[in-house]
Length: 102
Image (cartoon, rainbow, N blue to C red; front, side):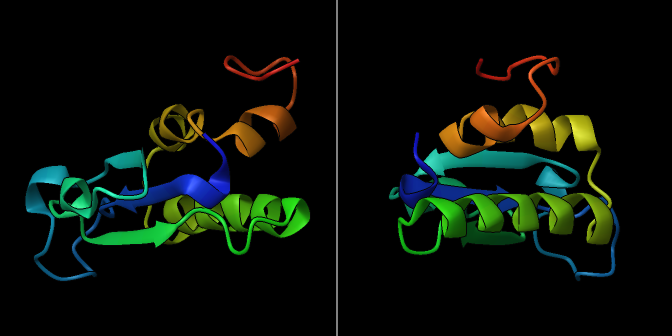
């Protein structure tokens, strides 16, 4: 799915965020907009894209990935597997990474 159509939900792997999302700690989910109810168990959610412009959406996808992995200490492979649902992510990661689009 395109970033402009996607929602990214996650819960950090640490407790600094408070108590929300205890059952989804360290997990990431990418789904289409809506249903928002599917992101309720997670501590955070964001729209993957900004405005539908390709470069802005690509930048936001990788900024979100960085936030989830670096700030919130989610396993990079867990985030990668979820982000593979986003077209712009698959098209821009290194072609020798599993799941990349040629």
